[in-house]
Image (tube, rainbow, N blue to C red; front, side):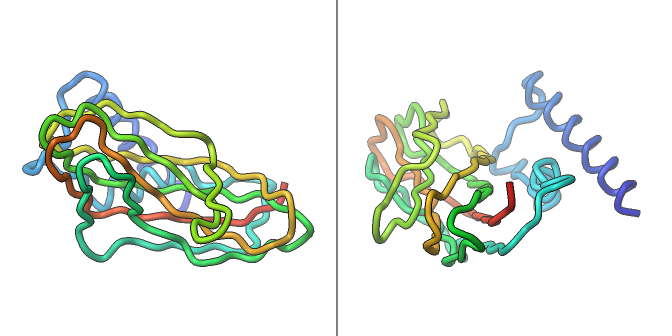
Length: 181
């Protein structure tokens, strides 16, 4: 059953990617991304063979988040996860569905480790071109090598570029997994 589900998931993902690449499919208020699309994307990045998951946390924002013009805004923060040994690896993934404000030319996505303490940027800033007022679903995934045994949590932030009006995010979620390897 799981193999059949994965096969169907990958077929839907490939079909969506082909449509998006060809310009036929576009995420708009009348054609929003569905929960199935989000699940398909997550299944695409599922951890396979060899890695052991030590702990996991998933969080989502329950309400719409306002993107205030060009200010960096925290969308969602994970709960704290313990490291099983003196160091560890964390897979951080999720998605944000963004409606950019007036004149926004791009959005900058960031993942921050321990945002209320060290606030370390993980994987750099990702700049994504957008069209103002057009809804866009932005999936993301990164891996963090934690050099010591302390607990960690992560925040997803977004910042509009050249915006002259507020934007909005609904929904956004973050999934964090401490794994071996």
